[in-house]
Image (cartoon, rainbow, N blue to C red):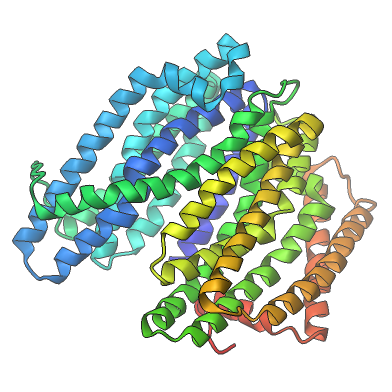
Length: 513
């Protein structure tokens, strides 16, 4: 699973690099970003996110009862519900797309051609979301049967198909070819899991008994689950709504922010979520046992590890964002103007990187306490704050202001949650966390300086206009920054160094660290 996850992330980077090379950061990519966001939002609420929160625990509970016939009835009912909701979502998307796009990107109204293109892409991508929802159901079914290999490998096929189909179809259908590639990729991900699901015992018999206790429970739990997901998803779309009002030149602000957000979120997915996942079982055990002291200690450990792991990434994004973006994206349709714009967005979003990493940890504390409502309520307030700051900051600094506003809101968000968690648990070892922040900030500053100096010095030995030269520069910068950061923390005897290494070496951490 670990190998497949890393490989999938690498293929995901290759997929985004392919899209950048084919379509750059212009209006066509902006239309695609908006077109993708609409069906993905609907799919996440109706199927994707709700599946993991509601459907899968329901299947697992019936499996543990040891009644195969009743389990088959439950699975058939749930799969029928997924198919009905998924098909209904596709039909509704075809009909409502002309009304959904103006809501998702009201600023596009200045360009009827851009709105029309977004509508066409949205209709295609709703089909992809149907296959994605079904694929998630199959993955959950396999995981509930303790089969993890196929669900872990299927995303590799998904990314590989999208890359190949995009290259093949883009010269013929343009940006529409990318949307079709997504349909093919999600269909391939779904098809790859069908044989394994059948081997695990999946026997689909169409039935939709809404009076069945399992379906009644799903319907009862789905609404609060969707409301919670809506807060998180809506907040991620606020930036796009405001960016759609900004004037587009050689690059479109919507496309620029999408690229920048993807670059900044990549290390969060690898470092912060890995750390949060590693400590979550400990948090849950301590919460269930009522051991608040151990819960506080483990929460403090997670926060310190998240700060330690992501601080040097922030330093690199601040020191050489243009080099990172150039290596990842600048070729063919992705122009130097796009690189400069996306690099500014990366630096601005990067300011909030450590806060986002800490958010993944502190929310696990509330989840361990079976408190889903507090992060949702705080998140709802952050949506309003984000909208207000976006409106103010974009008037001064354009799309960079939008990214800075989001970083500021991320910091406020985690600060409020930490304050509320402290009220529930008492001290979260504030002095130890503060000491880690201070040491990590100092080491990260040295890391940034070293990365910048090494990258620029390496430029004298290679041609910085060629990819090989850029890779050499970036490798030198990252290597120098990493060495300086690790040495600085080793000299300071930072305990988080051993904790983070343990997370990735063993997949677990000791709550006593």
